[in-house]
Length: 166
Image (cartoon, rainbow, N blue to C red; front, side, top):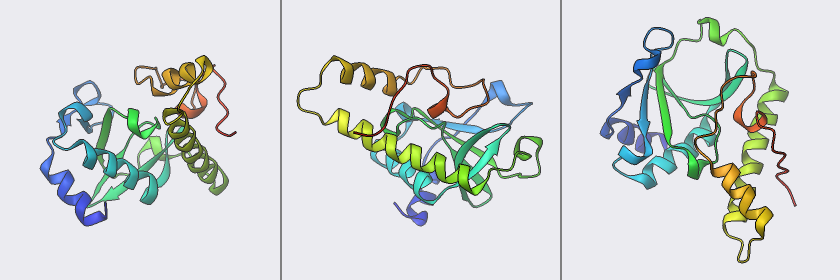
């Protein structure tokens, strides 16, 4: 998916107002299960990861894709388990953007997300996964895991230790 295709995708979907954050952080969201085309949904997520920029949200960091005055992001889950895609008006003057993300930390976040994607893909494509593999898949693909708190991105904020390499 390129940026022009992304704009068409954005325009064809029904973005829902996030009511629970309407006063503190107004934004919209799109649920995977309500998306008109799941392949385009995943293609858009890949575009966010490929073309997006790392910015802070208070002490956390996420990858944001900026298009036509809006920023789009998800919460750092493996792409095939992302259930919610978010959208908000870009306003980098807000308090939640005050933490400056170093170039080193941007690179670390992107590398870790990419390594995790490769690891998840490897696990999901394994012909005879053992119980450890199945437990890792279950953990990594769990989209109900709480990710807020502790000031860390989801890839760092859990107690289960996962090494994303062989």
